[in-house]
Length: 493
Image (tube, rainbow, N blue to C red; front, top):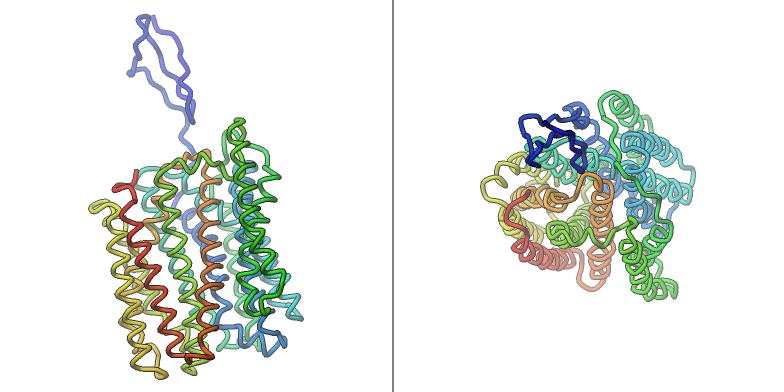
């Protein structure tokens, strides 16, 4: 005689137990499989992942044109970049939680539609301050869309297909950050229908329309099986913490470091401590806080986040500094300045496709090798700047950019996989939100720290020496990430 038995788990399974209490495995029956993410659906969510990252970097080469057309001061131009980055970083975890609650495809569609509308508002902005407001709204829309990408991949793929999808996500993220700067230069120079800088935002509109059609057809709906309500105190305290840190660092130098910047920086540790205490209390009481402290008990997530922060600081700082140096120092136009990084983008994409195979064979030591390779590439770029300045262009930068791109490709996609490897699918939105928040905050910090260092050194050292010095500082950050990679779990589950 056999009796029915229910085994708890993320997916209900009906099994039969014999009279002696042993499991009758021959009678196991599985319910319907979870929704699967097909190739077209994967393409669609990766398209959604590319848009916010492209738009973070696409304005770098358009800033001089924006300044001339809208009579924008340097401080306002920094807000065009920082307003997007800060609102994006502050709201990412909330976006992931809302996707867990209301459905990830639904939030992906809402976020993508809002991203298209706010991009249109950026492209039609009549004044500099209108552009800043539209960029803040665009960052909020990106925060609703992007966390759903990784959460959908975590929930609707498994095994080798998930590993491949995560590798492609990492490749898309890295390529988007480089391609954004290249695309920005091409669009500004093309001056389509007299739009100049406006085209860097307007180009998003047809892409978003295509993405909405594809997402409605090809992206499966997933959500947490046990959604929790929004953690309002945690959301407010996280927002206050990130604003207290990022706003003064991104605006302080251009604004002349007024009193509010120092007060905000002084408030940051207190806001961060209050956020941690509130989240720990919620976690201990059995509720799900915005950022569960228990999530950091996962070794892979904790150590992966420790790597993604210095990596992203160095990456975004480099992209900002090289854009300024090539245009204002070497006298290149937007297109040559953007194309100077084309070897980095091409090599990054090619090498990142090998990532899953290399990880299967060598484990996370691939990340360590990538750090060493990237260091060689950045050193070659610094040497080229020292020897060839001001005649610095595609040819002079090609060896260093190509080698650096290869090293970055061996790091970023693998780090993403490591961070989320042990996160349960039910917490996919929270986990991806935490990861992307750390990455996005670090991207903003890279512009604020390395960018500010570079601009501060120019008056006393000159453009060439300021560039070389900043690249040497970045090399120190690469050395840190390489050392941290030795602490990663050797294999990825």
